[in-house]
Image 1 (cartoon, rainbow, N blue to C red):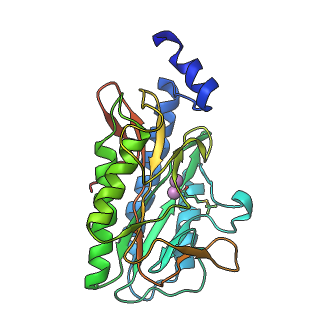
Image 2: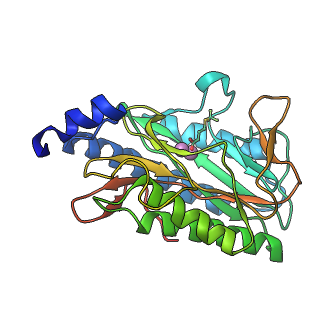
Length: 263
Ligand code: MF3
Ligand code: CO
Ligand code: CO
């Protein structure tokens, strides 16, 4: 059993446990990602066009010898996802101008030396509103609680349960249509990491698993629809939505973030 976990996870779940050299590569990509995301954070202010974020992320990625994974991914036309207010995820950068009180998620995925890391943060534009403060706080805490359940022997259901029970206790809702995912040698690998679920259910976590947790939390109802552009997902009730994402490694003792930032 022990010695065949890697084969077992591949065969049963199509989950590719990562070798130390691969983890190194993903971590290096994660460091690049975080340096770009931290620079984006400093740019965010009223008057900035969402396409200006795309231009910056695109240039910085190429300058580092990396490739922006979103560009042309299943037809996505830009190098980064920028999702404002009621946009849940997959916002396409364009002519929308950020205004005081908006919230904006920036989701970056570089490919460096063939390795992928995936992370996002939701930022305040200018002075936050009370509703903005609440949804950003709950989304950040949701990711934090999901991460804190990670350890060998815990299950994917434990992660989903921790997120869902917390977010709903705050009167918010969890989006069901988009999930976290294995990542590292490809953009979206197995397993799917649901942000809702039941304790003890789902695949058991083992060292070497690398996956994202990226809860999308709505201030109102969980329902969404996708705009005519076939990408932009918005809340059906028009309520605010926020998201935080990191790339996590399961270790012998718990977890390590390969795209670390404080929550
Ligand atoms: N970065 C997103 C995720 O967290 C995926 C974006 S797909 C794109 O999985 F094509 F919109 F970029
Ligand atoms: Co992701
Ligand atoms: Co992402």
